[in-house]
Length: 224
Image 1: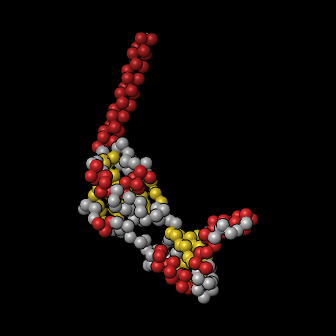
Image 2: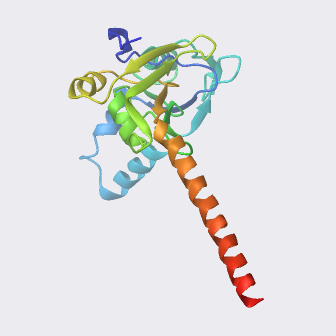
Image 3: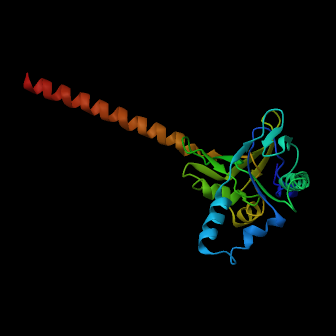
């Protein structure tokens, strides 16, 4: 099917198996931006604290083991909903808590049109287009058909499959307005000449062997 408007980015929903990074600040994140009033020594400490982030796994039971709160259910929420939920929970312990939450293991898989070139690309934000995803994977390979690109989305038992034509300027422009989602598969159909190359290579190897045998027989007969 062709690309549809609902292929635009949606808020990612946290699910089991996700790895979250979690930052908690008080006073609505005042310490994140109030670096200008610190002396050099304290500023270094603050930078270390900002970078001191730990991963948290969403277990099979949808629970995440978080500091102070313990096991907390975040699965089924998008990132903004989870941040607001956690801010409400941490108000019992901190003054105006500010939460920064990220999902670290979102990714897509790209098959660029030639065997052995498949790549797994991490999604660092919600606004990576189909064209950008292919560029991150190194582009469409020389053995791929630019007019036969498919985006496979959803459960593999019953996926949605979108057809993309990147062989024209119009197709490129359309694909550059549509965004990938976590766990999407981008598949570029291989061109027939990849198989033709294999046949050609095999024929060349066979000819080399045949020529070598012929030369050996001629030399052998000459020596005799």
